[in-house]
Length: 80
Image 1 (cartoon, rainbow, N blue to C red):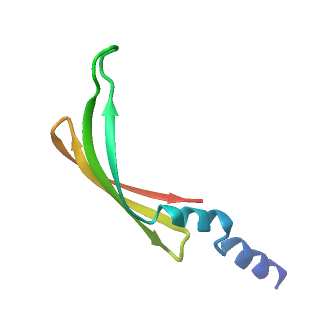
Image 2: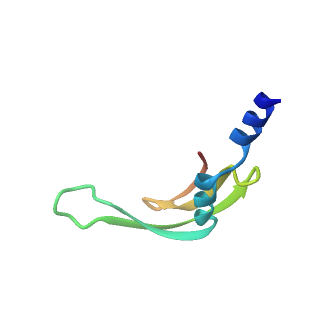
């Protein structure tokens, strides 16, 4: 039984998982890319929506925006 308790303790989300919850929501972004020294940066806009999954163990990101005038879609999973 001691091994099962240790497993359950290790599998229970803790403080780092709670801290990740601060990302949950929709965020807008402005991306600046500096291609040539001294030149003005190229800017693009985007947004990312973060959701909590698997009882707060992970955060999933769905990103969309544009990059050099072309649509961009991205997906990420973050955990501790």
